[in-house]
Length: 570
Image (cartoon, rainbow, N blue to C red; front, side, top):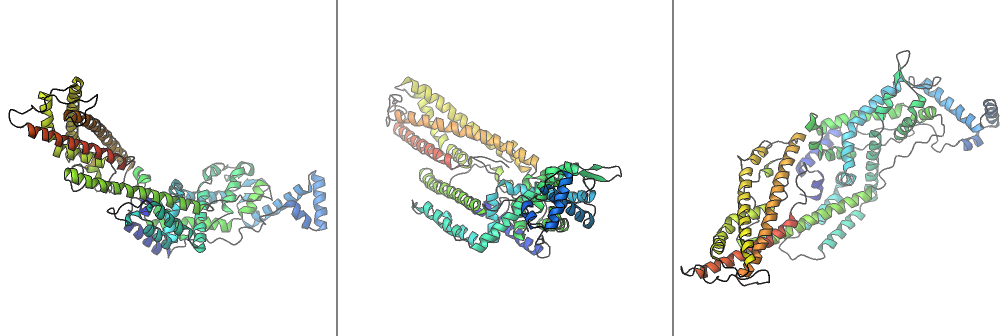
């Protein structure tokens, strides 16, 4: 699987491309882009009362001075009030039903707009939530659509898997590949950078739109004496200013941005409302619904003079919409995400490189053509395979036991029955170690039975075979099952490693090949089964046992860092 494919796990590369192609076909017939007016309101963004006062006529200045004198206010306040009154008069007469300036009320037509925009925000909310989980990963996916050439160059040129495992590991390979990645990223054209920036900025704007507190704003409306829902200017307060800042900075949401939002969301589609009775839209339904919601947003922006309206409600002609930031750091996050993906892929490749090395050792020492797997692995048939942390160690432990160790136990029994240890404590440790190893064999058999088709775990996994969607209850059930299996496997492997290490030390002393102050020889090693003429054969079997135990211990230790750091999370 490529680095890019890890961003959309649950979708194969073929499925992703098919979705993208269908979305392109569907989008051709839909009005996906918001058509915003060149000027949202005819108000200078750098409006400053003192500057304006310098530009008005002498007569107007005299009139303002008179008003300020009679109202006991400053000339600036008088000018602010005159402009607010002018805006209010324009809004009331040209945009009926928005406000009642005399009573300082926001009216029900504005409430209707809030409700329509709230529906649009709710529609886009889950897609923005997916985006917020990992913006960098989103940018990589967006880049694959906006600039497929650069994306393909990275996938082709910065791939350690292009180098066969049979070759000697080049110590400079990591640095060379990392430099290639930097070269491709630094070579992105200005035109593509501008498109990426605009696309990211539009998604960041949509993110701000989704965060507008529509519910709170709508809840402030109440019925007046005439049965009409209204809200006083003061109650609308800061919420309307925040709302105005977003709506006065409307961005065009590109088709590429929409496509990316949908495909990226599909990464999380199995973890959302589908498991709680909801449903996940298909790509064509998404585009149609998104188009309708964007028309609502665009219609509001083109129809309602929000800038003048907020000046009236806030009683501040100098109100300037806050800038909606976002998009400026897209390249930093994009590059950081690619670096992370490369390091992840490099770690995978190094892990596979070590597995290949272990495969050769397993073949040389035990005759296996590949790293053995556990005979029953029902998790591999559910949801395109549920990850299991101890695939290699459990598989090797089981194969080693069934193919080799139970044969070794015959010779170890002879030592337990007739062996005379030079160090008495060694007998106690030897007996305990052999008993523990017997129990490990029993534990492996029990686990195999439970994982088989008719076993407790096997039956549970069988319930979910062939299911495409992951319901929340099913995920919880499988997660708990995997937790139990991994916990038991971890104990088996830990116990086996400890016992094999103990047996290594004991066998080194028994065979007089590695005597220490703690581990001594077997005094009667040369006499065991001597009467039957089988002593030489017996000693040879012990050496075979030590050889197998030594290498099994080494392989299990080497396997540990190659296995998944965590198990199934759903």
